[in-house]
Amino acid sequence: MFNIGRPIIFHLLIRNSPSSPIFTRLKTLTTITAHLQNGTTSKKDDYFAVVHHISAIVRRDFYLERTLNKLPISVTSDLVYRVLRACPNSSTESLRFFNWARSRPSYQPTTLEFEELLKTLARTKQFQQMWKIAHQMQTLSPTVVCFIIDEFGKHGLVDQAVEVFNKAKSALNCPQTIEVYNSLLFALCEVKLFHGAYALIRRMIRKGLTPNKRTYSVLVNGWCASGKMREAQDFLEEMSRKGFNPPVRGRDLLVDGLLNAGYLEAAKEMVRKMTKKGCAPDVETLNSMLQAVCNAGEAEFSIDIYNDVCRLGVSPNVGTYKIMIPAACKEGRIDEAFKILHRSIEDGHRPFPSLYAPIIKALCRNGQFDDAFCFFSDMKVKGHPPNRPVYTMLITMCGRGGRFVDAANYLVEMTELNLTPISRCFDMITDGLKNCGKHDLARKIEQLEVSLRGV
Image (cartoon, rainbow, N blue to C red; front, side):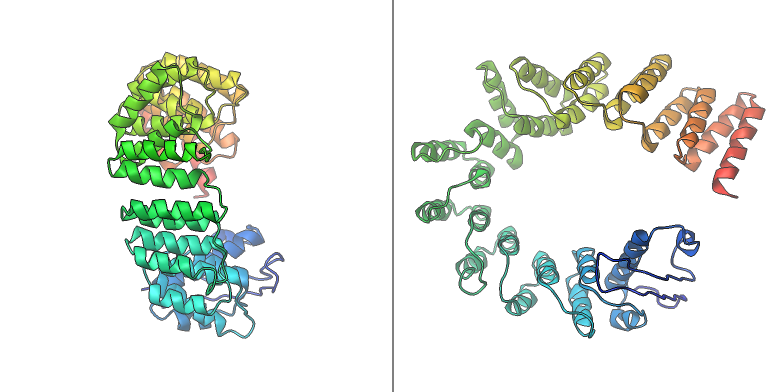
């Protein structure tokens, strides 16, 4: 239960327009940070702090209406929407908050808040309350109808999903778009009603709708999840004969379907056959494949596949590099990681910290600290500026390797960039310098920590 016994005083003046400044005054005794007390944060930060505070009340306070009544706030559509979005799994509490907001004379709910509440109720299987709210609305957008059908499908309630689809146009004033058809197709495939899915696709074509990528991928994923590769291939060939070619190649859809179904070995075998025939998957399928293989601890295979598809002329994207560089470093193939990084630079990508940090860490693990320091200096010029996690990692690796003076230098450099080191870095460096007999430098690091912490 949310603690309402602590003294909390809010003085908030909120304008009606969400885009205008929200607060003219914000005063707290115990619950808001010192930044707000000193007036150093922006009004936007103040606004989201209050959204967070009200969301916590909605989620945790048993008597939330009583607590909310004590807060002199002006309820706006934007405030209600953000609070509802911050409570995606608290259906009963969100409904109580929404009803409380509607009781305020200054608030008139919009479609945005209604639809967000409908999503929360559908997500938590509160379907009876969901329909009560839906009947209060004149129309539902295709996005919300798709979401409701998807939730029915995830819970195996295909009859309810079909019911929503059938009355979408008449009762909910929602057009049966290709996205709505795809959602019902997903619900049918979730319970393995593939004959019904085929009938739905034929109806879709008769209505003049053209299947898109999700149409194909939903059905192929369903077939692959049931272990029916042959049926998935026959479906793709049949659609191609009818003149409905998928937006991506059929082989890529099959690989994605196998990966989504957890058949990693079958997907690997298919990719092997494709590369041997001189045909490579597209970049999105390649990235999905590489990520799944690396998650399974087979980084060596991912490196081999990466090299094979590059020889076939595939141009990797940033997502590919983010997968491959850490994978190569974990395998200890630092030279391979350097090759991948240099290829990304040649492709016009400026290295992010997440790309060059794994190489620095691998060099430090091998005891190649001088190489790591030189590479880090090079990346500060050629890549994006290092962030706090990169400095923290480098300082930690220096400490583990006994390079406490270097760690102290990077800590000072970090503070000069207005990046605050964590307490563990200060403790590790000061203890290490004292053990090395460098008490003067250790004292300076302690003084730096005191000046930064203000203690």
